[in-house]
Length: 515
Image 1 (cartoon, rainbow, N blue to C red):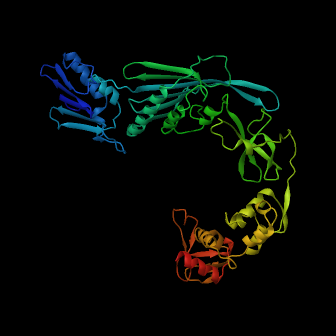
Image 2: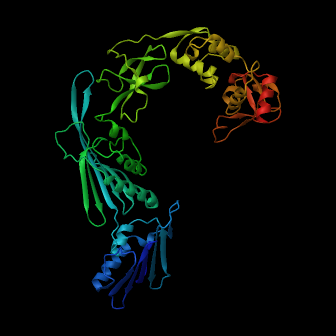
Image 3: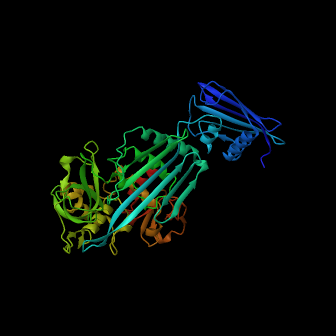
């Protein structure tokens, strides 16, 4: 199919010299392989005679490298000085000369191709990482009943063929397989990362069949010269070099993360406490919309437990949920030790939690902590008024009352709050003019209901029901529909729901800033 090969020329090297090879097929079916080595990487003699059988075997192996399916040229997307250049030229009977070459980037089966010419790369050819784990799975949360599930995973990397395969043996099927011939550069980086990590000290521990709830791994690496290196033990940061996660990050580039592989889960790798590590409990505090780090005197706490925690300058006790348990070395703490508070206690099973409410002057009613935080964020113009609870209208007077409330901003002085609550018509600061601009895009949901609105281009004030045109597009600005002014046609309309006053003074200030 590719025509009878008559001659092969192969050249590879760089600043320190090249290896030059010439493979010539004679008319009687024998062949001669000669080379000139300046770089000195070839293990073959300078001149080699091949019999008919040896010639046939060589040519078959040559084609099986996939050389005739290689790209015309290989080059990385970064600059390399004094790197490696290579070139392959093939003369075939009745065919045009076949030429493939590259700089510092190589095609699939490159290592096998070089081995044909006696060059054995000091790189990894294949790597296989296997994990076995006998995991106890709870059958009942009220009684101590469980059974054992045997987990088994495998990640196989063929650097020579540029392919990755993952498999779960208990399912007896391949979960994912990648033949990423176009990903040569990523495989080169992954190979370099793995070679670097293999030079570190590994805490090899032979697998123990009676170990439960502990992931045990076996890593087998084969190089092009035939040498094999094996490591095995417990799969966590205390037994495997921590830089191994750089390798796993490179593997995740090829493998879709379906959340079911322990090997691909970095949290599983770091979830074991080291001798000097400190334990931090990440607690989602109810009504605050975020998590905070705490210490605990109770080491039996687990993810999902409901707890009581101190928060704020007054250490007011609030309810929360343990979201995560993390371990950090003293040199890499997420929060200063002297500022980290302790969890008060874990809630008892079945303990009811009274809903705490506060009086909100903005809507003249009792509300819970979540709604209080939402209204406060609207008053601070961090979110749009459309995020308010159902039935809550919004205007500048309500914003003033919210900011002046003792619960807003954790009890600041009333005078300071009242000054901050001054309307833009009273105090149109530069920041107000900047912040108000974001309400001029994706505003169709608010304006289509009908409200007072104004254009900070032409200065016209009208009812938003008079707007008939909206810009829509696949971008963050116009995805929600952006109003066009019915008078000047410019996308510079804001409404009362923005929380800013629709006055001639404020619109003029915005025009000065934005036009």
